[in-house]
Length: 302
Image 1 (cartoon, rainbow, N blue to C red):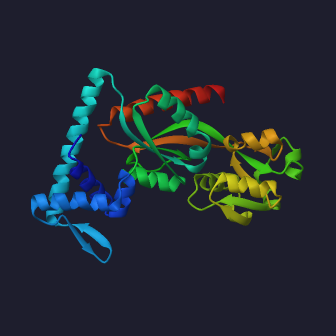
Image 2 (cartoon, one colour; image 1 turned 45 degrees about the horizontal axis):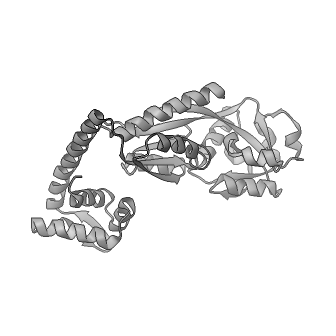
Image 3 (cartoon, rainbow, N blue to C red; image 1 turned 120 degrees about the horizontal axis):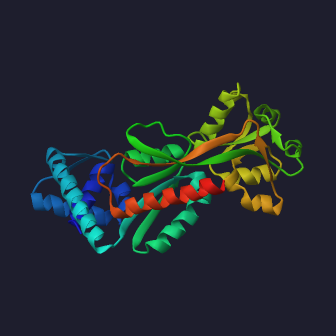
């Protein structure tokens, strides 16, 4: 393992926060502070300026960071090449998933991957699409899987499969009596939406615009940060919503909710997103291969 002090230092330098670094490294904040102080004692100089609850790199800190990044990269490359020779796939794998995918899609993928590669240590962060893309950009996670298109040209984005968005209502609701509906029908009822920054909400807005409507035309009465809260509100008769069909298996089987497809169909891509970098740990490479194969199965059975 590369010098632990350098790993801690580069994490603090990237996040510019001892608290966030401690969370990312699964350490206590005093332990992170101790490692940084050891490194500063070794170089006999301060590496961070600490003022008004904020930190920044000193000139010496910038220099150490430039070399530390290279040392850790070379160490990871060496470790990866040796693992290729021995056939081992192990180490950390940090993933991010947008809410719908994180709660309803990725658990089964991770279960299969972990069974195939038991020595890989997986950590998963679930946030809305905007948050996951930010974590990929800032290198907080290795791979993100998000809802909707990704427009950042600095990231690699590959469409995994197409997800359908449907109108969600109580079983006896007027909209549930039709096989398909046009999007304007939803405007007639109180609407329950995901929060701003949600991939689902962004795709709904784009779908409405493509059909001559505006998201602002909706009778928006409530906003929630998760599909579970929305489903509970809809089942209680508080309004209608639009959700991924992937979130509805349990409620449809129990007769708690009804889904109705749109005409034209409302679909969105689920995309894999990662940094445009030449080198990746083997655990990351294997996950990309594994996930793309899983997506192929999804497309074939959709």
